[in-house]
Length: 275
Length: 256
Image 1 (cartoon, rainbow over the protein chains, first blue to last red):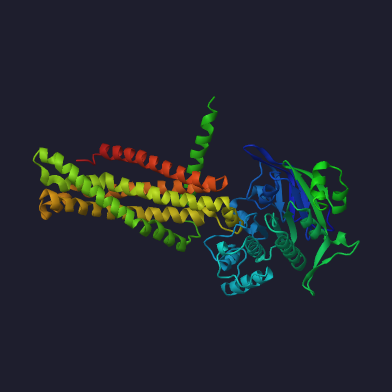
Image 2 (image 1 turned 90 degrees about the vertical axis):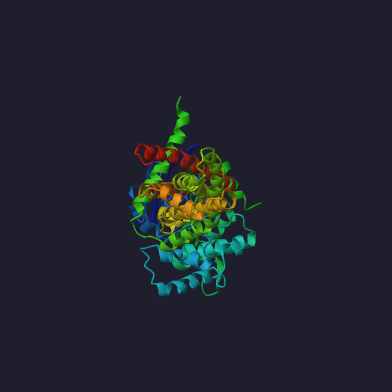
């Protein structure tokens, strides 16, 4: 699981997070390198969301260390973490758009509030428009989140996550609760962002189809569509699958290894494709 | 054996940590002036109606009740004195604070609670904003600025309520009512104390609302629970602090 070169963008070292009911992350260790996609499977309550929030410094681990861009998040104050967070985009499970702000204000929020971004005021509207057009929501600037459908809200939240062009993006269940067509559109956007901006991507999902698309398709910028990666080229997309179970990382490897696994728990996620 | 005490003690500790952090943030940038003004409008202007109605009826009822007792001693002309003293020292600050606790501690808790359960607080932190600065500080400053003002208005409207009763039912001349009401108040003790109480209550209302809002868990049911807890806790704390402050005031010789 080593990268071609350089230090990992994100590193977990024996990370344990305890809640009242017990450990939700139990000695989790992994490294994500530049340009890599990581697809994280796991049953509800297995610690997937906590893992992403810990990677962003929103939850402090009880033991172990988390490094993002080489910096130890566990030794930083909340204020010191703002600079690191400006380099990480996050799509929350419920979109987490601010109800009281319009879509334009929501997407502009990181540009205006992250001090290390320093986006000139005159440039904000253009970048917001660009980000919304990227997710095909160019005409929703004046609308409020409550006026959009679930899928549109998810796309607006993706626009907010990518507007600052962060090198690392975390997606928490981007397709949860969406119909198959909208879910496909969301994953296509995610692949488009990955391939156009060469971002490192962590995706939490329960759908094997999502992981399969991320691992085997790439965005064709000339035709504006997803193309299947030809045989033998899969390796170049660097998609790693991780499976979480009761806070522990029980599998880490590529798609071929995942599909060969005989572990009944892991098989449940792979078999979704056949059903 | 004392395990059951752990949770409440931890909650009290968390409350004071949040309050301490917010007070430390008062002078720290950024200040989010727009949010402070918006909250002053919501909390102050929005509560004007309920504060004046409460003050009016408190003053009117006080005048009616006290005039009866004073008449026994042939001192009905002192109605203005009693109305103004009880309003400025006690009823004005406490009743206005209780109204704001019901209206605003619940509003703050439910708003922040909804933001918490929909991950908007996490999103705020992820997008480079400290929720204490952006959400808690403006509410603390706005409530601290508006509650003393509302109390002054409520006190005055209460005295007007007493005056209307004095005119309509008691036959006390206006000049006598207002002069006795005015002379009853001692400067600066009553004014300072009449404003110090609402300032302390404002801290309680805003911080209790924010505290319960920010620790909301468990979806919409949790938001409802946080709202109820905020109102109950703010109300109890207001009564408790009122008793303590009045005792201190009496001990210092403020009551003549």
